Image 1 (cartoon, rainbow, N blue to C red):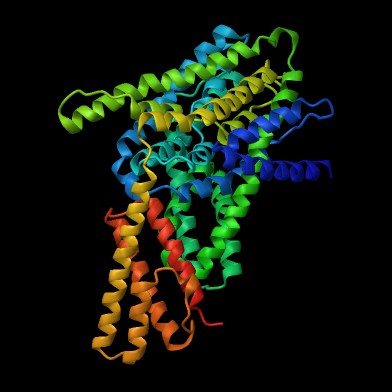
Image 2: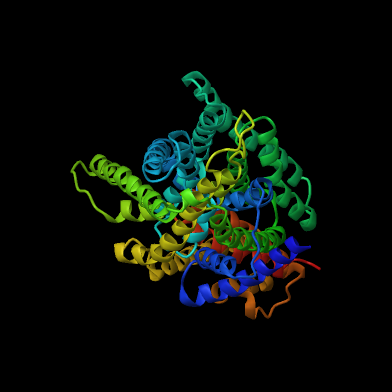
Length: 514
């Protein structure tokens, strides 16, 4: 009963925090972490023990699925090279740097230092997506940051298993074993995700029940994760691949009413899960600190040093990479600080590193307690909290300072331009109906006039059903197909496509017969 009360209390706190976050223009995850730390410091607060299964099996899959759906596949195809370099090379570099710094500043042996490095080496897709929702980054830059956080999981999992093997069992796997594990984790996860997406597509094509489709959508991330973990592949990769495939096919698999309902249902679920998990990150830290032994008291400078190391490693990796990319495009070496600075600072840690930290074994292979496990947990959680708070509160000002943020006028202009284009397409379709005498001239004129003078249906005065409604639904279907084509051809960005599709879906619902 106490756990239920804690969850309900965290959701209530999150609702309040999210309200104030919107008013003061700061990301809610950062405020939730701060709120969790403050609550954990109160005298009457009890130690919160979160099991690995709660985070990795219950919370993580739907949050990853939502992050994968938001990724622009079109932009990802253009950025696969830098994404690959960040997802593999930068993770290896970060893990090694953190491992060495940790062993210099703490009593942790080198093997446990690399365990911490493997835990914190990868950026977190849930945190990056949550922090990035308020940022008006260019589509390509937003995709780069999100894709890196989504696809560096396999690398960090391999490093984590190698480090755990060395720390717990005292052995290190060979290169053949490492390569095999990487292929099984990444490739197996991608294969499972693709198979799950194919199976779900077949089922969803044969049902139009909004309730059933909502249930299927909620089950998909758990199904992909569990199946992948069962065959010892990467559950995270499986969820992400399934989300990306089904996200691209969303228009084909569901009607307007179902899409609107899924948006509402998933939005509620994501809010609750994010509220709980980010609050728990902050809530755990005070209790973990109380469990430290006397010789582990100097954890504060170590947390600062590890957090700083992660940022400096990203800077050292990204600035040369950005300069080389600019040189290859323009033929001249013209390094700039804006893009690498924003990408470096956007590398937040969060839920995925927390799940890895919680899965660190309690004992060694010989049955002895794992030395300094409490210190490992404090360092991992402390760095995660610092990342979410410091980078979370300062990322938006950095984006504004860099001049990379897309101006609201630019986004609005693209949106208006796309809506006018859709209206022109709709009018052309109505003209074709008139040419073939598919409806009465009076009805055709009604539709044409409403399209030209009334882009918003909030003030619609015509009969929403019958012949008029049927023609308008046909027009909306044509507009939806044209919108998908405009997005595929790069005429509009991901956010404009999402907003206009939701607008068309709402209109379609107005013309649906009861």
